[in-house]
Structures are given as C-alpha cells and as structure tokens.
Image (cartoon, rainbow, N blue to C red):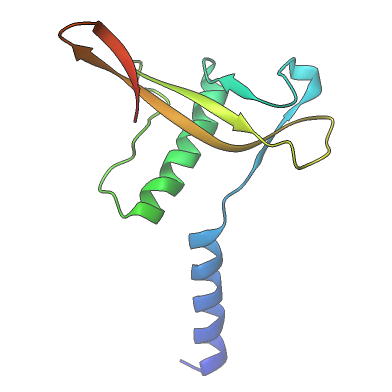
Length: 111
C-alpha cells in the first residue's frame, strides 16, 4: 500500500476515534437553551446513547454504559453555554441506574 493511502487511513481512523458529534436541539422543540435536559423521549435517549458509545470507546470498556431501549436506565443531556444558537447544543450526557440501599431503598446513581 502506498504511504499516502496509509496516511489517509490513519487520519480517518483518528478522526473517527476522537470526533464527538455535538447534537443540536432546535428551539422550536421547547427544550431549555442551557442546562440539563432529562432524556425521557426516545430521540433524546438515542443522543445519550451516542455519548455512551463514545465513552465506551475512549475508556476501553467492554459494554456501553447506557442503552436507549433499556427502560431501567435513565439519562440526562448536558447542554453547552459556549455556543450561540437558536436552540440547545448537547455537549454530553450522564446515565443513571437504580441501586438498592438498605437504609434508603432504591436510589438513582450515576453510571
């Protein structure tokens, strides 16, 4: 393989490995411009899952920490204040799972 082709492949691999797409939520959808948005609806849960996949890849985990179609997991999207837009720019996500505590019962914990 010519060196140029190898360099193109390597650049594509590094770009795909390190690129995290920041999702846009239009203002017309009624979400707050900045802050934390609970990922209750499936489209929002899918966005949270893309961040979980990035986290898996970067942290070398064997499995994804959050799956959109798993009803026992909950997530919240974190929006950015650094970008001016007519809507919300999602910059990250946090996943939560239920854990039982003997003295408090079921509680959500950050996954």
